[in-house]
Length: 365
Image 1: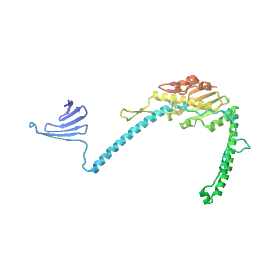
Image 2: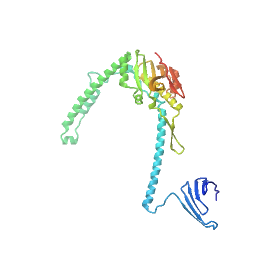
Image 3: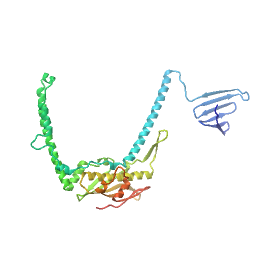
Image 4: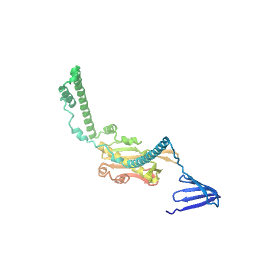
């Protein structure tokens, strides 16, 4: 038999609090009758005759036993339902934490996504889809299908052979038109490539408009404005809107698998904000270098801040960076810290860990 320890405190006449290892209870009454309620749900009633040694004790638990199968099944199903709900809550908690962690990782990884580099020289020197005066590849394939056509049993039976041949003949004409379109598109692309290589600035802007390399950043609320008067460089004004992507709350799992949510500390929020802005800057430069024969990209990042003197939001320049193609290409982008990487370039950035970004001056060409 094991030892049992219990502490008992008198809180009022006839009322005591009993503290055990696994539960806590409260009891009422005097020597003749006492009523106890335990935190485990057990209720005990003791009735005795003082001095006689005789007593009667009854104990009830919070649960209730049912006799009929329907009630028993109902209790079992409710128990299963509670288990399912608990499991769903645990899975939802895991999902919320995974979503939060992915969001934190995403803001630091934007620079790793980039368009493939366009080789404009290869486009200019490359062959056409087919030589003018010759049959195009799509038309040729349609002609082979027409020549090799053999009617099946049901086509002969229902006299659909002629209709099938007519359809194949019409398809030859359709594919001929498609070949012509492909050739005209190739001619346009070659002409575009020649203008890009010649440093035509209007063509630069056309390429950016049609290829839209920063569309995914625009989905986060970011806005862009491009300008240049020299084909060797491009200047970009970038509206950050980091508040739309950076989480405001930190989410973790407790030891029991439940979701723990608390406000993100200022230090952590500003750290993520800095990484996001710097990652976007690297991504913008990479995309521009991939699409255009530029040597330098100057990027100015703006964000909205509340002016406590006027009570209005103001657009403030928070980072200005001059990025050279050769230096950017020398970086190992999979392992850099985006914020630290700004030290590789001429830049203006005033950032405090506990207060975030502050206004800076533009870098000029």
